[in-house]
Amino acid sequence: MEVDLRQALQLVRFPAWLLDRDGRFVWLNRAAEELVGDVRGKLYTSIVAPAHQSFAREQFARKLLGQGVTNFEIELVATDGSTVLVEVSSVRLDGPDQVAEGIFGLANVEDIRRQPPAREHNLTARQAEVLRRLAAGCSTVQIARDMGISIETVRNHIRHLLRRLGVHSRLEAVAVARRDGLLPDPTD
Image 1 (cartoon, one colour):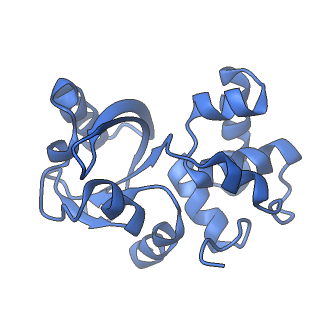
Image 2 (image 1 turned 90 degrees about the vertical axis):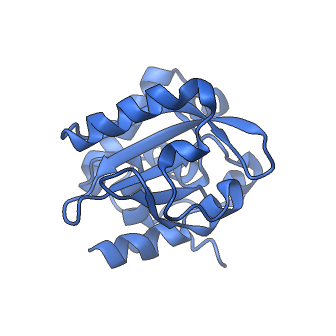
């Protein structure tokens, strides 16, 4: 399953990575390397802005203690030294004590509008639109603003979407949607 997850996460447009039990990067997709560089072997906190370090450690510890999916905002330091506020979705993986994380909030809305709708998978039109926006890296706030709906309505769409896809996190939803052909291949 891990290989499939890595392959699926390599195709997403937003930064995604796997951390080991010590909080060190063990794998990053291309989008993550473009944002923060090749930080394999380094601690997760090495890319977190100083003001958010303790919060990052707390979120990682909660994940290791078994908390399911966590979504939170945090400020990261990009390769050019700039900081960017992003929404992170993380999930603990079954298996070799790893945590998978993906960043939302770095989307190009024009790319989303050009994407075809998701293939039939019993998704409503709104769920398909939310899925496309998640795949592009939009945060909950961005999705609400761009679709003209409330943040709580976006969260409800996401909850229903996760159930329909049989997953537990936004990150898994995008990976499964790519795997199952619900989203266009970003390399096309």
